[in-house]
Length: 172
Image 1 (cartoon, rainbow, N blue to C red):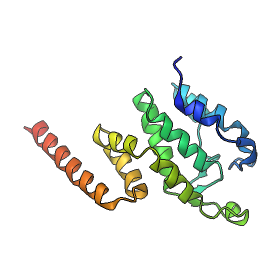
Image 2 (cartoon, rainbow, N blue to C red):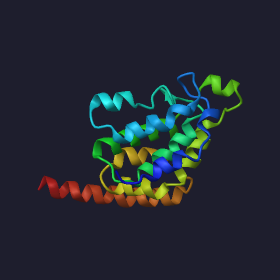
Image 3 (tube, rainbow, N blue to C red):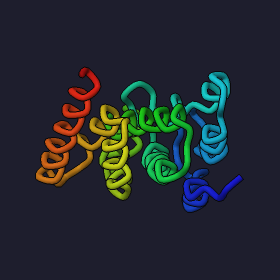
């Protein structure tokens, strides 16, 4: 197995001090994330889901921001297409959510902003995803997190034009 930057990144956080959506501390998140990276079957993906830990529907828990950081690191790694799409879906949930009411009461009303900041650290990974075939999911994340609206609009216009051109070639 090769060295994964995302797993090294996971060592940087004090997970035991973070609240998790499952009601425990986030101490188990690095192992859950490592299992997700190694998942190959639908059952393994289900067993290593971040649902109920980092987020529940559109509501975020304290571990969501560091999880976003792990996802961004993982997107730079060699991943299966299934895993890449799964991680992009998790990313959208993290950057598109808002703090769970229990987090607001605990003094963490802006977990979404922390997730945005973590995603911005890997903004070019998201642009690469947008340009290389996972356009819809990457575009959603970029639309939420890229503060440089001129850049987003410019890339969006260029990439949409290229996708349209490719589609015209495919149809003929």
